[in-house]
Length: 472
Ligand code: COA
Image (cartoon, rainbow, N blue to C red; front, side):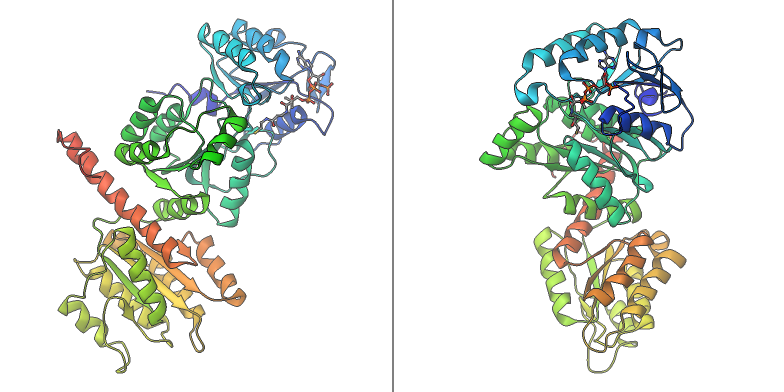
């Protein structure tokens, strides 16, 4: 069955109210973005003053447009938005995006209540107000006024803050993280996080869902949408502190609520609460490119004792295990490392470790049934060979696809300077999750373990296990 928001994300006929010839105006940018999208649709600018904008025939009102409209973007001052919304209802428009600010976030509750009452009497689905719109990278449609486009990929991003949402596009591009859709939800008077999580749950282009939220309007619906989502849901919830909660109220007009309750609710629903956007992106990259870990036993391969110990501490602190090697794995690794070191977990391959030591030791760990995931680390200490570390990982993941063969995740860590960073970019571009910190690496592995656990519980739930929510 087609999801109700399908025409919202894949509209065939779009109108922009407040479209303008003035290149400084948001209504101009929104129209231009749709026009230059790599997506075929009909576009109607709406402005009572003009006959044509950007080469397109302009109409005075949405009700004058001869076609049925799938999506209307509104970019006019707040005081006239209600009238435009009434026109949309009269025209039986399916979906609306209200870009305009000036509602509850600045204390104009009556203006916002008027919009809610119009929506209730109609069949429209409305995003906003106070939003950037969305970018649907899966099909190449840009229904926002924001500059810049994400790379196409499988992470869906929802942001209550428009500016942050735009920032997330740049962050994603910087990290070579592909995005399916990115959407701002603003004051959430109709389309809410739960609607979008439901949509992304069935969206074949989306593998991971990430949210930045300041407040949730309907806690039960939010939790249910995460519970019912068959994909990992990562949540950054801001407004943790007293002052942060105050800032939330003046940003999107929402109440931040009890932070502890949010933490417990997200966890109980099966989502993962992330400390910040960096952590959300770290985890999203791991979840988008690697299989979930079937257990929490982690093998660590390194060329430096220090980073090995830090990774071990971070793993244990995050709730993962770094078990001793089985005799069989010990023997396999013992054969390939210098006599000066003995295999252990973390496996120290010694500072001069090259391509083969990394590949053979990682393979030995993947083959071990007592290991559920592997972290491969490198420190650029003296005579270390970063090119070979990078080459070994590229071979294992891109060429040999060992993560798929063994159904175990492989992620990486590095410590080094600028000369090393360029090489790390090659890994990021190939979709390999690699992090410059032991803690970030361990947390990303934890996300892969939690995802494995979530999938198992989902299977149990399908079998009718009534204790589904008891131990998470
Ligand atoms: N129907 C269609 N167009 C109309 C109209 C109507 N009933 N009434 C006016 N317009 C036209 C205006 O004439 C203008 O076009 P013009 O440039 O050809 O004169 C255009 O709509 C825009 O109206 P204008 O009064 O110039 O507003 P603006 O573009 O300066 O500002 C907003 C409008 C929505 C951008 C502004 O009010 C706002 O909310 N800005 C913040 C947006 C934001 O940050 N959102 C959140 C992002 S995360």
